[in-house]
Image (cartoon, rainbow, N blue to C red; front, top):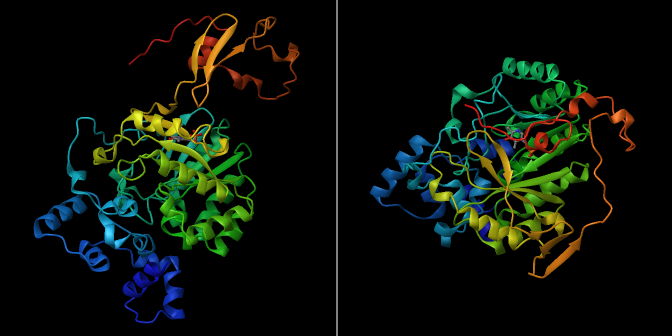
Length: 428
Ligand SMILES: *Cc1c(COP(=O)(O)O)cnc(C)c1O
């Protein structure tokens, strides 16, 4: 903690930290205004200097992918070992970002292909991703939407938003709206409230989620005023993005506590990053610290194929090894789902260690986390009930008014009794 205070002194050019400078420090707008965008500033605050050659290459990297680091996030970096610092690696450019890899794709998740109108990605049956902001407090070096960072042409304007609301209104199957960006919390409070109010008017929207990294990189954004406004929506969930236990500072915890105190359930989505968190012990610490503050680890993402991310990518095997070290070894609700977001817009695919060893007509052979091999005896008398989707005549008590929505697609369709499909053939 002392080092942090020293850092703030230095950054604020202030010999004795007084109340005025502290109130600036904790003002999120001051943090944004004073974000670090130049290599020289990083040199100054870390007390280092790069060689001329390195600096030129770094500058070239910044020309391709800009940098922005909040002073707060910068203050978490250990100046004595900055090169190995997980915060430094997520925030400061690496000249390897300019390396080209055969696997690189501009829009690996095909978010634009699956976009019926500007700002909306509609890939799954009952939910949409709604890009409401293209601004971020900190430009993560591992951003999957790097192509858009700092791109003024992709700032959603009010008329885009209104078209988005129209789209959601027309699509009565959308029961979950995921606000993303950029970072929705970079918008002014009134703007956020406007969006939430518009969504609240749409009856079929049952759940609204906000994805934000502000608790990690700009915890001061979680002001009492914002929290008070958010507390009025009883169907709101917030997902954040902690990647390393080091990011769970006092300030971050304060921000999280404010949100959970008004009843907002919180989840966390981490990205598996080489030399940042590709270690079972680090990941275990991270998920344990998260649940301590009532943030539920939701996903660990395999790093996407976006341009400039090759050096962050790990093997999938590393991810499975991490999952192998979580399940059983810590609280079940601290274990996230490890997913690969399929290139080409296939969506998230869960990947996990295998626990089923074998199977016969009456027994299944399983192994637990310790390697104990066990059998589960299947029931002798579980009879197959032919299902023709005639729910009104079924003994199971499913009373729903939207039964026509339960038509199967994909693998479900292969499993369904009422459909004759026996294989799925890729087209196109
Ligand atoms: C991740 C994502 C969602 C939400 O997926 P969940 O598994 O429900 O969290 C929705 N739409 C798109 C396009 C996504 O990438």
